[in-house]
Length: 155
Image 1 (tube, helix red, strand yellow):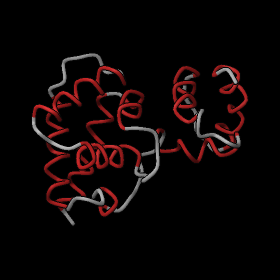
Image 2: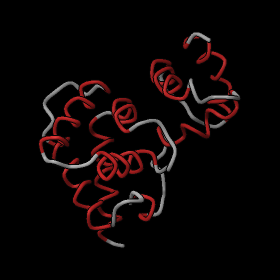
Image 3: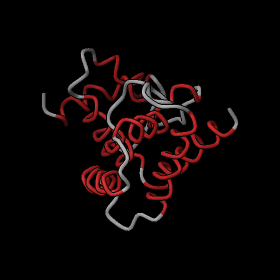
Image 4: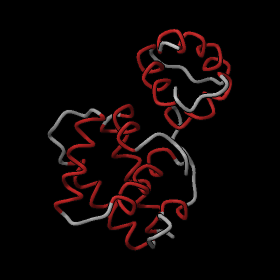
């Protein structure tokens, strides 16, 4: 189904769940879940984190092959990288820049990208971190990454 049509069909479900936003924002959010969506009524629950900062345990920030101290270091590295970001704030630009930084710093993808995605969505299963960051924008992305760092430090 075309994205515009799908978004139109999802509007009543967004409204019923109290999730409001500009049509372009709702379309961008719907696009992220379009491939995973099986029922229209599932969409608001799957994307509520875009509208309300998620509450989650610091434990889910830690990727299965990592530990809390490594996760904290990775999130701080991502936070510093995005805080000084000068490129376009789009999914593609963020992905390219971040992957270059990961390679340059000799980091691995899992221990770097898992906590980033969880910090932004509060979920173990969600769209990718670059897709989420692209929609959230730089200010909200930095805020959520900072919040995740605080969670880990207070653990």
